[in-house]
Length: 176
Image (cartoon, rainbow, N blue to C red; front, side):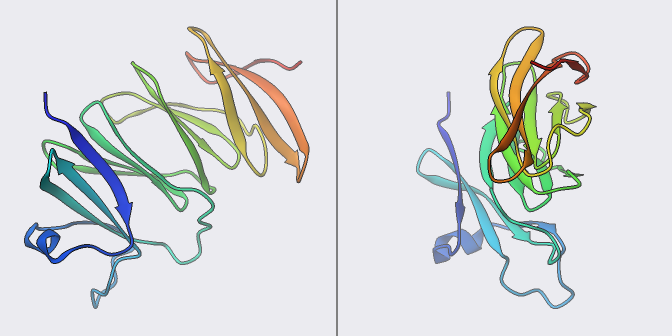
């Protein structure tokens, strides 16, 4: 099996410029330098170059990039991008708030924003979106077969409250 590697880069070597970029985000009319590059290597070979142009009004607290199933998963700004490894198809999801964290599970992808959790299927479809679980951060501590346990930040800097939501539909199960 191939060893794929993916990472953010603020600058790239000239060798990457030979690869036609996939451009995502708020692409300016006069193309300038992207806010960040995502580079994918297949072993030691340059495989894919993604250029992200940020939405200016968004917050950029956290960012992540990973390979999951047949997708390159990018959390950046207020968005989650899924870029097909094989077909280079780009799916973009507005998280309505800043991106927080990725939690990669075998049969679904869990994404936390500042206020909610989102579950995605391997087909790149939103399975569910939770109710508001916090206002300045949602963290997952444990994912069991049927329950996701975590904390939501309601009163920064230390006003965290626990939650439990269903892995099936994202609905709250109860609070401690």
